[in-house]
Amino acid sequence: MEFNKIITADSLEHLKTLDENVFDSCVTDPPYHLQSIVKRFTKGPAAKHGKDGSFTRLSKGFMGQEWDGGDIAFQKELWEQVYRTIKPGAVLLAFSATRNYHKMATAIEDGGFEIFDMINWIYGSGFPKRKNLLKPAHEPIVMARKGVNKELNLDECRVNGDNPKKWTKPKGGFWKTDSNTKAEYVENTKGRWPANIIHDGLDEEWARYFYSAKASKKEKDGSDHPTVKPLELMKYLVRLVTPKDGLVLDLFAGTGTTGEAAILENRKYYLIEKTKKYIPVINKRLNKYNSLFI
Image (cartoon, rainbow, N blue to C red; front, side, top):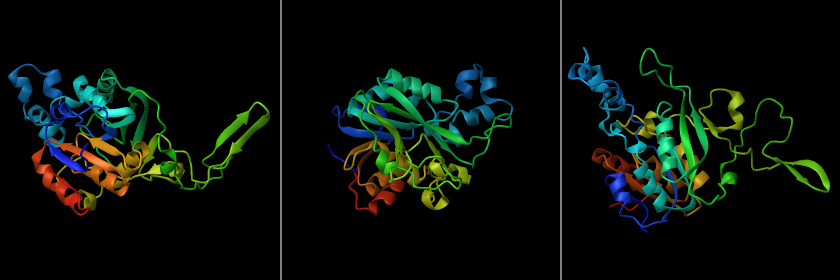
């Protein structure tokens, strides 16, 4: 299997051309499909356009992005192909929006995966999309696996932050028992056990969880992509579910953050991106590592 590649193609159609059991993980940020006002609530032309054209604008997708339209992330067939191409025991991590998480999770499960957890990325920044909505302050990340229950790379993702308050037990450990001895708390000096929460450092109370702020302007490097994920977050996720020297798949590559994260974590990447205008952005980002592209 070729690696360190970026493929310009429709994800579903390209996955159909690949062999089975080739990827060690899949870490991806699919379209959130927040465009559904026209499709779900309107029928006639008057309702489609509204008085101010708002329905028409929203139908184009999140922040007017055409790639956020459609329903690819809700299609069972897509996740069946991801399931087919990743190795037994491999883990899928897929971002979603709170409003549509259930649709994508259902499609992933129907595609053959076992959903075994959800990571919640919590952040302080954000703005409500309409006056009658709450401000978004977190994004759910589906955790699903293919069959065999393989261990996560927990030791590589332990959290070393100290909580300012006194712990009642040493950090990072677990209770060890057997039939002949009393339960004993065993400390792990590598840090605290990774949790299913990632935060942006809002308060000292969060020190026990992995920290990741939103992507900065510097990280976005002039890209107009509205959902660029922070590099530190993607590095954390890649190393959590991908073995060293393993091959991670991202079927919605965007600006290539997963590829850069894979390089910096000594993993290999395979990126698929349909929107051609983002290919130069990915090339610029990854060429500094002398990566190979097609």
